Image (tube, rainbow, N blue to C red):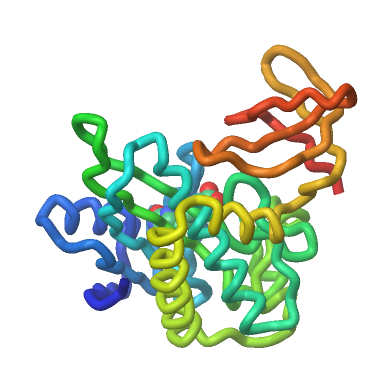
Length: 246
Ligand code: BTN
């Protein structure tokens, strides 16, 4: 992973570039990195603020031999990679908020966007977009999101090196991916759950149908979050709105 690395000063979105490269037949492990994104994309069609030289804006092309329903496993895997790298490079304690936001001190510092191309019930490729707020000062985080977003520098009080952090992510991604290929989802599940935000804790869940108190239990191979209600009944959550509280 990362043997073919395409670096750009400025792009609309590294995801778009990876889609183009994938369609040109570029191999598994191709990586696109940009200093700045003009139209960075977040999940649920939200914009992703990607200012020049302040973070890691990168997309990885993967060609896993999985069925489309297993694609969420790759996203969960990517989140564990980021949590491991942050742990190894700092004193910070990262949490993964389901499905794949990285939080430090309850604030989001990183997000992952997975886009998949599938045909005949087989994955053609997966584009994993990774955004990490690295070197914004607290004041450089937009005011409207400052209560819930931060950067590694703002939390660690240290400047982060973009290049070496990318190298570390790619190295860790490769070894985690190899382990996952050998051992299966349980390998990812165990790591994910040790970093999982509020796992084992009580939260309020409101789906379209009802609002209830639940204890978060863990994740499933299809990417679902498992919650247990007060009677011990387990429920799988997909896109439920969880009141994460403090
Ligand atoms: C989210 O939390 O909503 C996901 C954010 C993903 C942002 C990254 S930055 C690199 C890649 N290119 C994009 O346009 N988005 C992802």
